[in-house]
Length: 381
Image (cartoon, rainbow, N blue to C red; front, side, top):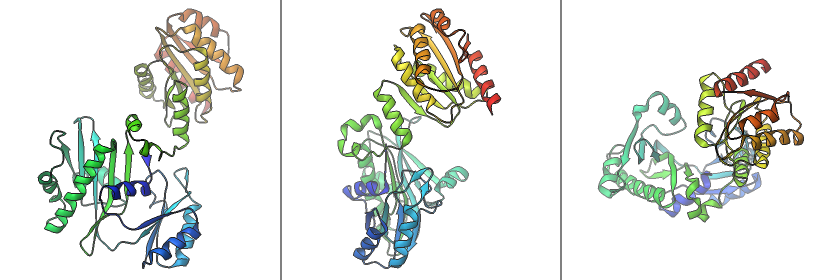
C-alpha cells in the first residue's frame, strides 16, 4: 500500500524527521490562502498522486507571487499524471537548497535484511542514477539483531557528510527512519531529496512510503489512508470473492488454479513470446460461480485479446470449471476466444461439455494451449 507525500511527511514529523512547512489544498483558492498564511518569499506547488515522475510531468511548480500560486494550482489540478487525475496539491515552503541527497530503507529479500540506501546524487534523476551509475548509490544490509545504534548510524552518515553538525543531524534522521520502518511494517521508505540548506540544515522535502499489505491489520491508522487506484480496486474486489488477482500489462488473460501453476503459466507465455495480462488463481476447489466471476473479471480488461484457462484438477473438478465457463458466456456478451487446457479430476467430462462450442479451443497440454493462444493474438493484431 502506498501513501501520498503529505501523509508521508506527517509520519516523518511524528518521528522527529524535519520537513518544510506545507499545507494540503484542494482548490486554487485554498492554495492562495495557504501561501498567504505561510508568509514566505516562495513556494512549491506539488501534485499529490500515487506515482513517481511528478516533476518531469509538470506536476511540480515553483512560485513567488500569489498570482503564480493560483495559476500553478489551477494548471496542476487539471492534470492527469500517468493516468491518475490530480485532485489535490501540496503548497510547500520553498527551501534554499545547497545540495540534494537520497536516503531510503527497503527490504532486500535476497539478503533477508532491511537495506539502507544512501546517495549524494539525490533529486529527480535518481532513477537514472540507479540505472546508469549504480555505484553512486551506497547500500548496507542492516543486521536485525543490531539495528541502527548511534555508532552505526554515524558510520553511515560519514558516507555523505564530513562536518559534525551534518553527521549528527543525519544520524538522528537515520535512526528515526529505521524505527518508523519497523514500527509501521514499512516495505520501502525514501527521502528524495534530503536537502542540505545553505544554513546547513537537513530537511526532507519529499518522501515516499510503501507498507506491507499483510501487516495492515496491525495498523488501522495506516489502513485508513488507503486510496486505491483502479487496479487496486479490482484486485480488492477479486480478493473479496476468494480470487487472487494481479493486473499486468499484457494481452493474454490467464485463469489458473494454484499460485505455482499460475506463475508457471505466466512464465511459459513469456517464454513463447507472449505477454500475460494478469495473475489469476481461482483456488483449489473452484465452484462454477467463482469461475463465472473470474471470467467476468478477465473479460472486463480491454487489453485482453484471448483467455488461457489452465486447470490441473485435484480437488478442483474439470466439470465444474466447464460449467462455469459456459455459464459465464450466457451472462457476458464477448467474442474473446478462450483456450482451455483441462487435466486431472473430471477432465474428460469438462472437455466434453466444451467440445463443439466455437468459443472454446481445447488443448491437451500447456504448451499446445500457449501456442494456440499466442497464434490467436498474432492473428488479431
